[in-house]
Each structure stands twice: as C-alpha cells, then as structure tokens.
Length: 120
Image (cartoon, rainbow, N blue to C red):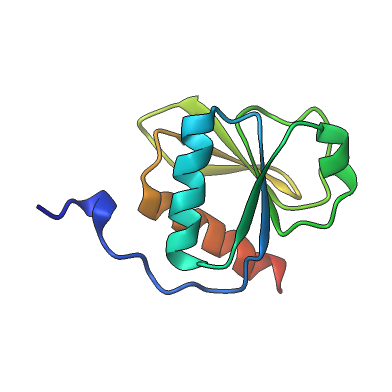
C-alpha cells in the first residue's frame, strides 16, 4: 500500500552536498538523512556536537533539534515544537523553524525551497 509519505520524491532542485545535523535524536537524524538522500543521493550528512564549529563551517545546510544559541553561517532549519498546523516560520535571515511532526515530503520541499533561495 502506497501512503503519501512513501510517494516518490519530487526532482531535486538546486544542489545539496554537505548537511550537518545538531541536537537531533539519533532516530530522527537517520530519518532526516534517508529523506534527504531521496532527492540528493550524494549528500553528505554528518552529526555535529560542537555548535561553535557550525558557526564558522562552510556547509550547505544545518538541521537542528533545538534553536541554535547563536547565528550560524549556513541556512538552518530548526525542527521545532509539535504543532499540527505545520508550516515554516522565518526566525532570522538564516534560521527557519519548521513545526513537527513533519512528513518526508514536507521536509524535502522546505529544504528544496531554502536551497533555491540561497542560490538567488
């Protein structure tokens, strides 16, 4: 049985090579990585523990489980509070809060939109 969350991913837009995940539970980090690989098969996803490293590193995207305590160099998605309303809220120039729970398709659309905007 094919469910909406299992539907084929939309074609990748923009290029995504290097993604860091910070403060995500291991199961959620694995889910995020598997979803990103659906659209960007060559993406490198690394779990990072040192937030200071993220503030200066040249990565394409950071996905966080909590709000970062400082401005990061890369566009950042904060997988925030549980809220059935869904949606994405821009917190600052490079930080967006995405409400949970999130389907794979929604996550990919948010990442694709941020990649497209970052290249403009």
